[in-house]
Image 1 (cartoon, rainbow, N blue to C red):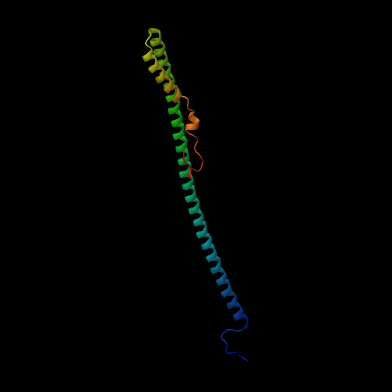
Image 2: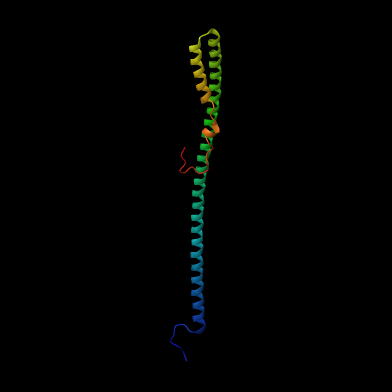
Length: 138
């Protein structure tokens, strides 16, 4: 007895297996494509994070350099003020020796002002930068 069905028995199973293999190959290809896209996204995210990190490091290094230069200038100013104060003290003593008391008092006031301004701590005046500078006020 012949059947009128176009596929019977072994042929039907073979066609079914072929369809399954084709579907499995298509599924594998879709998964591989998704994995490639995911890798691209991860690579882009890593590149963006690397750029942000390099900007942050550059910013931090710039702040460190600014603080170092400010402290160096502060130290130089302190030395200058101390030297100027010593000069005014010498001039004050010379005026005292000559009996010019009014001028000696003015020289003493100038020297005292210079000494007072030279009595700062540069590390306190210019603190080290923090890693994150959000919301910092002096």
